[in-house]
Image (cartoon, rainbow, N blue to C red; front, side, top):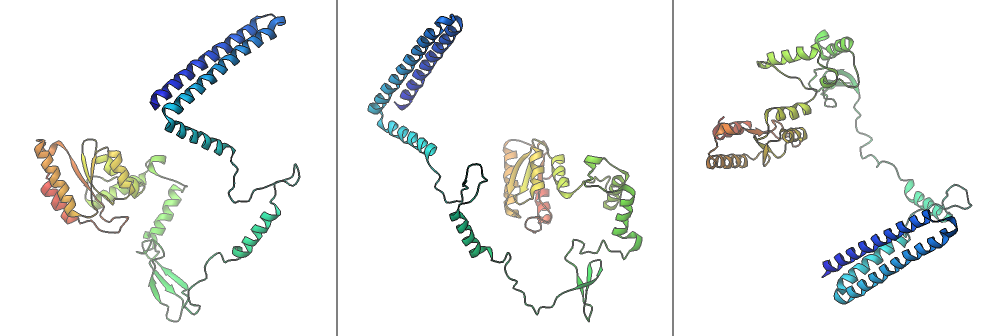
Length: 339
């Protein structure tokens, strides 16, 4: 019943609006075509027709409203409440507490009232004088550590005994950047690279191309790892993302640890492969997924070579710091994913 009434109202409204537009168009044509002496009369007649159509529309709407009151009063009640709520939102005044700017004289800059100034001053006196940072909890008698010398990963603290400590205040806690090796140190080599190639705000290969240093480093990496070749990325994130997307493709199956970090997740998404997750470092769950997949392949008479499968994990998980059980993962791979 409600849908029928709404439909009838919409249909009647459309007809009335169409009639109004037709009358307006006719009135405009008459106004443009008649002589100047009779323009006012014809315009008045046209406007009279528009008013008549409008009045008939209002009468029809009133009849529909009374009919709806008789047949579906619940719908009428809800619609009336919504209409009143809209009117309330339009005309309501903002009663929220706040500082509103007013003008003392017309044309002056906006200024706070005296009451608002007093409230701000009271609030500042109450809270504004509090210290920006909590007081230090350290003991004033605690021994202060003063660094006197830096030797790679080792710091020499000032004092009678010249205490030597390991420096964990930097990423170079292995001492690779120290100057103890002379011209072979990382610092010396970095200085030579800056002198030869220069330095800028950004220098990835994708932006500025491949230079001889990139190729030499790739050859050195391949030689050290005893591989046919190596590829160098700008950072670990892009390497992880590109590696997954380069090996896997649509139709492959990726069985992924649920705690891998964002670059690996991006690579999994870019691969467009089918993805299944196993609980973080849960080898039993991983085994169950592999067994279930093997059963599904058997039912579908699908050979192992028909669909490639990859297990995606991190050796050292970035988010949790836990280590992957690579020995167990390799055993499961060799037994349940032989190819």
